[in-house]
Length: 354
Length: 267
Image (cartoon, rainbow over all chains, first blue to last red):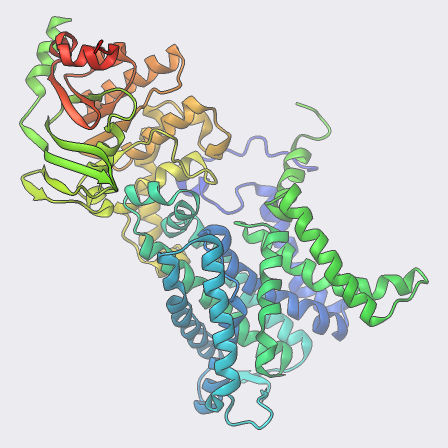
């Protein structure tokens, strides 16, 4: 970096545990917050909010949720879009049936419902690991998809099976325009990022990581696998439930059960693999990557005077995704977050070699 | 020398742990057959034997990782047929592992902090918000952990991911993690395996210091006979899952069955 961290000493354990221990980083963070809250809404158009920033913010919340489970606790899940669906339908039914509830409360309740469902589907993790657990969570995906397609009560007996939502109103504020949605989602994302950061540096986070790294040793040290794994499933599904509710209400507006299918689950998994397993920052990178890539693939050929068809673009998207997943698994299993950390570490000393 | 030995002898108390008639088999393979021995408070008790003698299995039985088919374990006046690892940890038995079993993705500090987990009480909501009791608790336990880090002289590696440390230091972190549990009994599975002479000397010093300063009872498995003879108060010898010797280092050294097991006998 351009700055040096010399002379910044930590004299208490509290100071040593800060999220941003370096003074310049804190200044940078404040500047970044001012930028995203004040500058971006003033300069960007609706299109950027609707097609880029809103999906990015929501998917980041979901990716953080999945990362807590997969990256921190080491339990694989291929069914997290299903927990997003649970959150979305729970929120839909709460808004529909108890209209006087505040939307923030609806979100929390939707998250809790998803957490409860996640807990149930997390039970197989107590006996099986790795690939086998992945397949078991796949069952969650198919089962929940099926439930929302078949049990009409959840969709309020809509004929097409798709549900509509109205703009959200709370504390007399109607969240309607893209900018308002953006500000609301950004605030939520910041809160959930802080909570995730707090969890992973507390003893619950250490329990998760211990289960991930060496489960026998974790048990001998007195960590209960049941508790560690199930809390990870619950917290992770809570995040995804909330992300699902936001995805339905703020991004899609109207959706059918297929909106939360296996493709979305896999996309979430790609996000954390590309972004970085076991890194909260990586979720931002991963989500940004997944949201931006299709748009770039659509636009760039036109810019360079070589237009390609939409079908071609979406095929290219799959190919590039596939190639990147292989690339990251082989070259940098810790993803973009690791590259970022390496870059920072190098720049810390640059331009002096020692 | 003799003054120190007398001093140590004076500190050794009554029986704290007793293994009685333990037999453990995996299918047809008998890992342990009818093994009995006891451990007294504050002593350094060594378990030795050739490879495959059942030493690590013995620790795993005490630890609750393996459940023996026969026999009982008496610990602090209570009798167990088998124990469950969590229960063992709560009751104050910690252990280190022969093949390193550290949490590779975590820093040295976090690894040692996991040893304090049993004592951390704040609920998940407080941890999520990191307020009040959760923060206070974190700092209190950090203080204890820092004392252990000082004690084992690994200050410089606090924030390093353990996977990147050399082997000898990893062994030390393993010990630190076990010590963080403030155990009554510490089970050490080959704490000096693969170390060079300086590292072994350091490790011996740490083990004796733990024993002297914290009064921790130590049960250790070790192959280096000079170390065993030097630091242990009593030695159990296992061979093919049976106990073939038990006593002070000098007694064991003179035991014909032990000599045969190590050197072999002509048939």
